[in-house]
Length: 313
Image (tube, rainbow, N blue to C red; front, side, top):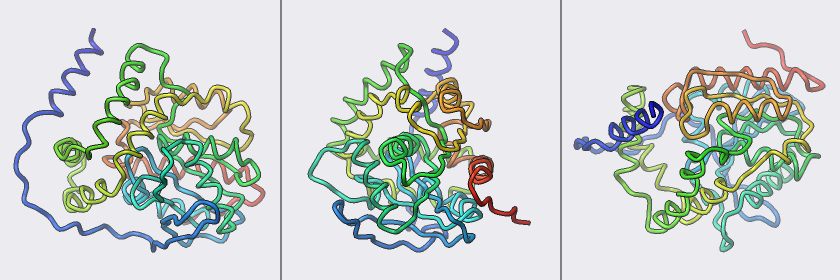
């Protein structure tokens, strides 16, 4: 009952009345250069590229559900990843500036997009850093295209998310979310999420206009289909087929993907476990801690590659 009371208290705090904010221009933070890559057999993919340390491996950053590469990684992860090698960060299909397809979104198709991009730009062997849905895509990519993947860092990612009644109810509701998103993401939902983020991390206030504009880039229908696909995702068998160095970053205060689900993933994959005191939005409201955990994960994975990078002083 105490857990239920906490959930209700959190929900009531989230939905409280919005106050009017002064409109802001969508001025972005500093970002790496972006370009369009024509990926054979897939289409045009928007990619951020960050120059990094000379390395045999490229770091591929794969963002989470309803986000874009810039939203997920701008608070510091681009720079951290570049300590280990050149960095590419695509927008997943249907998200941000990602490719648009007439076919419904599937996690498998999105994972194949990433693999095709890695092959197209000669980025193999790639080390994929995946957040939430990006972690699921990273696992699928490693299982379906093992010749392209040399390591994984999985953040806020679960082995499977339907073991308890709470998880079943929450993820079953994605069908309703999918229907609603066909008509566009509710403006109030974005405003309330961002308000909560700014309360926890006031530095975000200067980018509030940009964050809201970036959220609107995604295709509502694709994002809805992605939510339903995540509700069905189960990596218990998939994890046994992946044999690359792996680190799992656990967000210990996570309400969306519970920390025990994340730890189960680490055990199933024999992964290095890294924990931070943060919720599912730690990437946004605790960027220093989140980026430091990504740094630890990359250090672990690269130390098990044939040529590990030297520390940066």
